[in-house]
Length: 220
Ligand code: BEZ
Image (cartoon, rainbow, N blue to C red; front, side, top):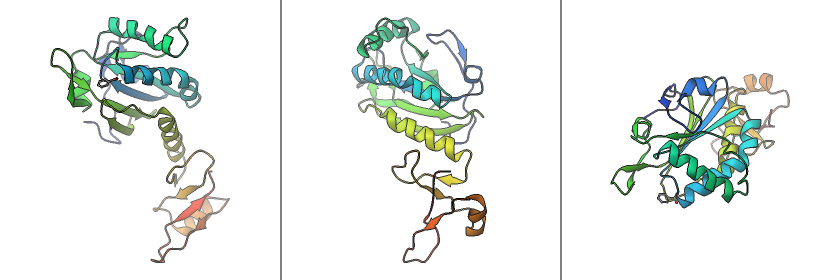
């Protein structure tokens, strides 16, 4: 298992774009790695297609995208054509790499085996994991969904916006936050420090405990 803040494994793996060494492939970018149970499956096809459509949004945020599934590169290449057809881009090349994890080495190393899902040979499949890795190669976020629940990639972009903002500013983002919405002053900052740090100031919401912790500041 990789914990938040750990350096993400610098694995070597075959992909539809050739063999990669993960850290070299990332370069100085952020990265999102998302896994799938198997090729030629319905939910996975909708997810890969959604990421094709949203790719410019990931690129705008300097995030490189890579998928993973437990089948061969050859299967991935065939399936990728179906995905492109599904999103109405049949004449275009599939735009991001898909890792082949046939021996489940990465599935085990990254703790993303789904105990309820097996292939026809009885081999375990991968769950729907999401890993966001920062340019420092450290894990910033991980989410794990079962095979039967498709992810919401708008939410994943929203989370990346929060991660990228909070990596630079001493703010946290509240429930349902979106870019442009008010942020929260982090608890480790005193009111005096917050006054110096946030020229636009902050508002405090009073609570019965009289503790001063609900402090909102405009998106810096
Ligand atoms: C799917 O992608 O549709 C799927 C894969 C494995 C189990 C259930 C659904």
